[in-house]
Image (cartoon, rainbow, N blue to C red; front, side, top):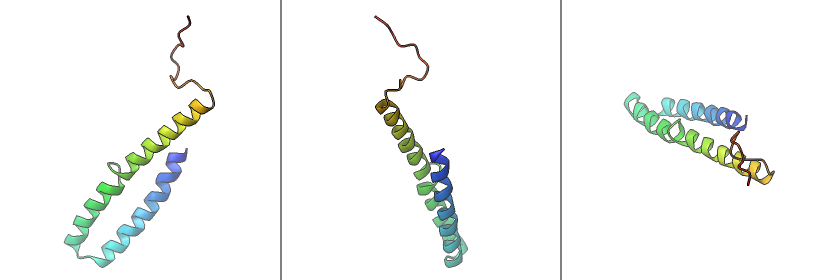
Length: 78
């Protein structure tokens, strides 16, 4: 799934950035930085935004291909 691949790539970079910060900052500074960093790039930040973008793109692509976007609901007939 695209989202899984994106999150895997982002998480690898997040881990690297946190490692650099940990090596550069005092323990108290690092704790504060880590909290802010993960707020921006973690589940409540970038990860949620990426999930929304991927879902919207898949929905748009489904509509472009003429697929129903009502996911299993009966299509009303006149």
